[in-house]
Every structure is written in structure tokens, then in C-alpha cells.
Length: 405
Ligand code: HEM
Image 1 (cartoon, rainbow, N blue to C red):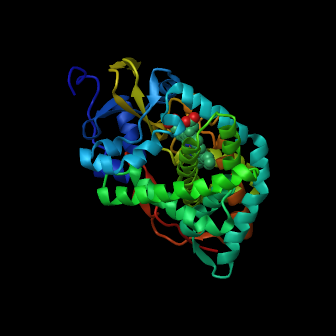
Image 2: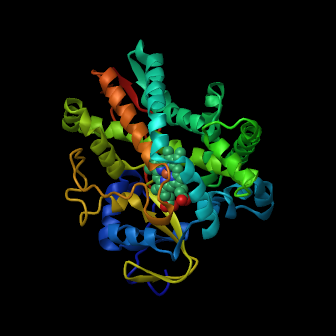
Image 3: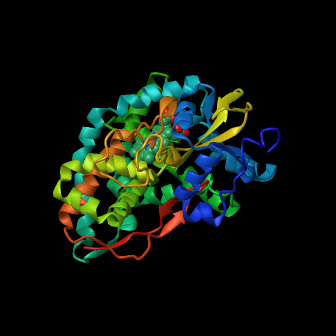
């Protein structure tokens, strides 16, 4: 780093320390250099709760362009992947503020408390159906058999996709993820194929919903199209965003949450004894191991963060996972305590880009855990150490979660 070298230290997120124990590593970074510099990623990293909270609320910090992975490719490769970029650029968080507000207003027509209540019995039914499939085996991989298909089914319902196409939705969801990964060209081509296929598919459903509206997001988008508020391209691109934003995240919360319960048998016993603690337990899971560990921002103008000046145009990673374990805000931050009060974690973000699906994700996780614990009184982990896979730029997700019951 140039002139700020004395105050802003450099760190490497690709070390064993950072990948094996991301929370321990971030404790060290927070204490040593609350605003730090990541040379390999050409970005700053913010780790204190107060600074991250302020940055999330700041109008001088814009949501970062998620097509950064594409920017690192050659011009010819970028040309080949232009359809992906065009689509991502229509995602609500990446548009100029006026368009972002237009999409927010529109989607809030659908994302209401009433929608969450309407979907609740469907979530219960999906959870039961998924557990029925494995019930007689007495074992399952929670990631594969429950945590991934459940939110995929919910999003399929939300988009108005027929039941028979739900597995396809999961495949597309897996397919598009590398767009935000390490820039491997083969994977990016594959991701583009998934995205283009999903667009084509959604256009067909959109045409049906124009003729015969139902109570789903695409019907809502098509009504807005008729009012001249949104184009078909924008509607379809933002349906893909909903899949991206709502599938892996919720799946990881369910799976990470279970690992936390298995790792803290006293808390699991407490929850089994009093299932009314489930909403608090879900908040504590979000705090201790929320699936969106880091969000990206770009400084629109020079901005002061953690007492330092970040120049305009610079990329800043906000480590929500570090904010959520900041000892200045959370007593005993590394203790998983499902009775924790005043749990003001930042796992759904804050401010202008606050998660639109927060209430839905909370409800899905709540219902899933209640049913799982109720139906499986002998639920036990069938692993020695959890199957953590590293995620970019820091954090982890589970590759599998074998259990017996
Ligand atoms: C546990 C599950 C989830 C977590 C941890 C999560 C986390 C987040 C976070 C941190 C943001 C803010 C991103 C930023 O500040 O740049 C966000 C935004 C968003 N989330 Fe979620 N999310 C979850 C589930 C969902 C679900 C189920 C949906 C919808 C189906 C959804 C839809 C969205 C959308 C549309 C945005 C963009 C909002 C905007 O730009 O105004 N999320 N989410």
C-alpha cells in the first residue's frame, strides 16, 4: 500500500490461517487494522461492526459490480461472455439508484408479510415431503436431501415454475454460481449456458403469465410490464437474481445452523426442550455463521472509513461475519447462545440494499428446523469434522452434512 501503509496493514486471505479459521483470523485483523488492504484482490477490508454498519448505510458507498470476475478476462473472452454481463447489469442492486428504487418498490409488492404467511404451509409440506423420501433409510446428507432442495422448491413456487421443473432449477442455480468465483473460463462458459437456458425458460412462463396471471413473482412482473414499469429482459434477469440471492444462502443457513447445534449439544437440548426458542436460535445461527459473510461496495467518492480515507472508485469488502463477532457489540461473541438478546447482527445487510427475502429466509429456516427436530428425535451428526469448503473472498460453506436419525 502507498501512503497509508503505516495505518492500513496488508493481509492475505489465501493463507492457511484465513481459510482454516476465518473467524479467528478476522478477530486478529479487526484488532490490528480495522481497515486493511488485500493486495491480491485490489480491495480494502472492513471488520468492525460500527464501521461496517456506517458503510452499509452510507450513500457514498455503492453496491459493488458483481461482474468483477468477468473484468479480469481477455477482451475476446469478455465478448464471449457478454450475455452474462448484460443480465447481471440488470440485477436490481447493480443498477443506478433510481432503477434500484424502481425494482425495490416493485418487488415489495410481492415480498410482503402476507406472502410469507401464504408460503408457510408450502414450506412445511416441502420439508415433510423431503423427509418422507429419506425417512426409512435412517440417514441422509442434509445438504443434498433437505437444505438445498427446500429453498429451491420455495423459489420455484415463488417464480411460478411447475413442480416437474424443480430439479432443473437446482441445476441452474449450481450452474450460475461460478460467475462469482475465481474466473475459470470453462466454468464461466457453463455458467453462461445455465443462465441463458434459464432466461429462455422464464420467457416461456412469462408469456403464459401475461395471458393468465397467478399469484407469483413473474405474474407481478408481467403486470408491471403492462404498466410500462419494467421490461421483459429486466423481469427475467431479476428472477435469476432471486434464485441466486435466495437459494444457496438459505440452504447454507439451514446446514450451518445444524452444525452449530451439533457442536453445542447443550443448546440443541435447550431447543428440543423449548421449540419456541427457534426464532432466537435462527438469529443466533445468522450471527455466528450467516451465509453472506462478506458484501462488496465501491466508494463513489472519497470516503472516511475506520478513521482512514478510502479514495473514490476503490473496492471495499465489508466482512459482515467479522461485524457479527465484534466483542464491542456482542458479549462472548464466539459463544453460540440461542437465548442471546439484542442480537443486532448484520447478516441480512442494512440500509439501501437490505435483504428483500429476510423474512422468507427466517421462516423457511424456522419451519425446517422445527419439523426436522420434531420428526427426528435421534438426529446425530455422522461426521468427525464438518465438510467445510472455502468460499470467496473468505468464509466457508458445507459440501455435505451426513446425519443419522
Ligand atoms: C439466509 C438467507 C439469506 C441471507 C443471509 C441473505 C443475505 C443478504 C444480504 C447480506 C443482502 C445485502 C447485500 C448487500 O448489501 O450488498 C441481501 C440482499 C438481497 N437479498 Fe438476501 N439473503 C438471504 C435470503 C434471501 C432470499 C430467500 C431472497 C429472495 C428469494 C433474497 C433476496 C435478496 C435480494 C433481492 C437482495 C437485494 C436487495 C437490494 O439490492 O435492494 N435473499 N441478502
